[in-house]
Length: 146
Image 1 (cartoon, rainbow, N blue to C red):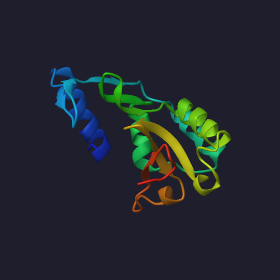
Image 2: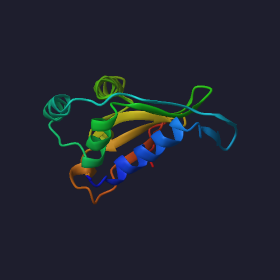
Image 3: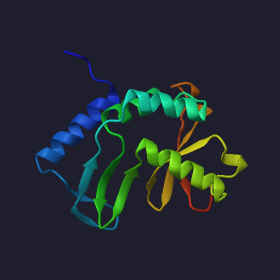
């Protein structure tokens, strides 16, 4: 049996909980039955095309996620939760954010991969060159990151 990496294991457990109806969650300000949508996988060719277009190598963990699910909506209650974009939408949103100066020259090395808590989930591509460096960031709409 093939050994699962951490991303595969987390998504496997999440899928099992969804299939068993364990979707009632409590968040800071609300509770409810959360909705989940895990998209179909992206093709290896699409990943390679993306990396060629942006002249970068995506982090291995993110590529694992894309090979399992080309985007997802997680823990959605009343339209709020975590949206991880499809690879096609990552391209669209990253280009749009740069055109709108949402990602300006200080953030040239960022890819916009999703939304969460009225902010954006980003990959810092310079930090993503090695798996040892934290590369995930969350950007407030006011352009500060964590």
